[in-house]
Amino acid sequence: MGESVPLKLEKVSFSFGKHRAIEDVSLEVDRGEIVAVVGPERSGKSTLVRAALGLVRPAGGAVEVFGEDLASSGPAPLRRVGACLRPPAFHDNWTGRRNLQYAADLRGFRDEQRVNWSISRLGLGSRADERVSGYGHSLRQRLALARALVGGPSLLVLDEPAKGLDEEVSRRFRGLLVRLARDAGVGTLFTTDSLETALECAGRVIVMEGGRVIHSGPAAQIRAAGNESVVTLERAERAAEELVRVRGVAADLTSPETIRFDSTVDIADVVSWLVSRGFRLIGLYTQQLTLEELLVRLSRGPLPEAPAAAPKPEEVSDVLALLDDGDADLSAFLTKPAGTE
Image (cartoon, rainbow, N blue to C red; front, side):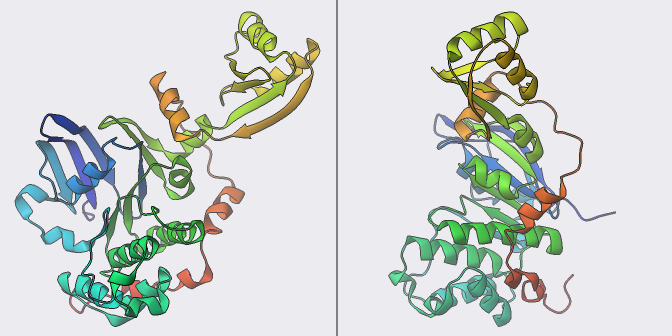
């Protein structure tokens, strides 16, 4: 029998007084899987992370980490989990390195090679040997992510890991998550309010609003559904009316010159028909949905099923392009104390 799923939440609910922060939330994170939880502010993402880490006790439902129920097992299974919460808290009078060493000690195994690896991967450099009290917001976030890695976890639970990072560091870290999942089997659950960030590295996306899960499925499903076509043309309002009346095509007029079509529309056929009716085309382009647009789309009903086709080679290359050569050697991360698996 294989190892238990790293993280499983089943119908978890939690309230702050009369406010229901999360309600009947169920999800799983498998070994080597990256799951993104996407939602606007106050959608319940941070509460979900804290429930997954046993920091809040659910009013209903169950949380299992590596097959053990946190309500009865205590913190033992969490030793295999690396976490990053907001805002990150440290011993500010210690250096960044000392904070990382202490975090490793709490997990029962410190390895200086992995401490140095974590410092390097998050670009802390010589600043790791300065007191954290002198760190700015970006450096504190880098240290928080390094701390999540320093114990060599089998599961990462990260709340808004990109907050405060510049785009280059953020992209490199997302690339590292992909490499850890693929080559070290690390499962990752992370939250974000950026749909673009989620789609870039997650294999599965969970969308939350008002404390509830309103969508859960492969990232490819959102990519396909969100690949909207935008046509600019003269007399767009008349064109939209005729498309609806004559062709029965859903045409969303977004400006006097712009019509947007969802991914289910054969855009080549629509454009040919418009030109044949005498409408003058100005431009055509595609764009991904924003989070706000996705929420509106989901309010109309479920998304179409994900395409069955395998990813195209160029799509795989796009993901791998996130990874730099320095991430290829995971030997320091994979170091385990004698006598463990």
